[in-house]
Length: 468
Image (cartoon, rainbow, N blue to C red):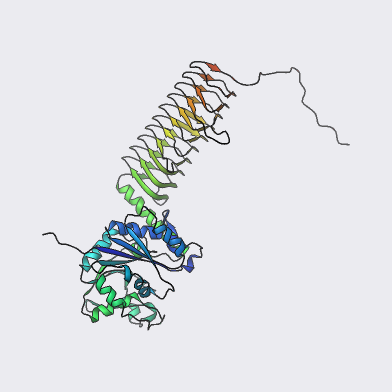
């Protein structure tokens, strides 16, 4: 028969003040790779198939709780308050009333965002529903961490830095702040801890000596990766962890076959899916959900969010694409940029060309359409092979409502034209440069709407008057 494991309940400590962040924003809401620290932890909890998560809030609770309780979380979340903050043991005591007795509790910190789910799964396996399991790591400089005190191989206690003897401070195996423990045992031990220590706080780590006293095995899962247990207490630490995280994401992409010009100059702040032979130049930022087809080339200094880019497309340097909720799609073989901007609802077909300083918003462009210079297309439907001239715009807003412009196949729009929506430019038609078109045009027609040119012969420019 398949072994049955107790359900997992995650407790996340997120009540700290974060004074060293020097920010009005609570520490656990500071962003790493564009995501709040505590959301990283909740995402990991969801990967464990946890039954529930209990977030312990305190400082900035009015800001933290709406985020963690928002709809869309992948697991059931509830919050408890720790007021005042009297230590880590006191924090977890606040969760006791809402924790079922039949589960394994995994205790995490809201400011330790990059612990991997497989590491926690190994820790839970060590716990086995009956033991106290600690996640530990050996550090060359263990200053500030609780030391793992052993007798032989058996763990006897965790001693905090301020309470450690000189000999204990030489120990380099430290407690990460993460443990897995049967809920029924945790509740008993939390009821027995006290604050007789150098900081007059209730230490969660005191449950170790209580477990030993009760004859409950204390086991460890030891890792060698400090990034997984690194906490964030200052802007410097946040920046260091951001770089470590980004470099890991870059290496993961390269292992999948993506060509990165410089893995140290990539920022991935969402989900990036790449087909074969994708090339990405330096200083590119990817946000939200982005999909790159086979052979896509992304130039330097692009910002790309919430879009799908078809095979063989080239995104030239300094292009900004953000689909927000509507999304953006770029067809196969399209050429975009440099210095182009694609906004929500831009749907570009195969082999479309969007050139420098062209903006496209909520518009469709069919196969082979081109807008190569200094143009705006908003709320437009553009047919195949349309050539849209430099400096031309769709005037889609009348001050109250948006209106649509339809440009049918094979139309040529001259330079510096204004198409005042709602309007349809008939297939195969031509709009002369400098025209302001306010009425729909017939297919195949030439439409010109501008003042008649006047030339005055032998005209002299005004001359400056001599100073008095």
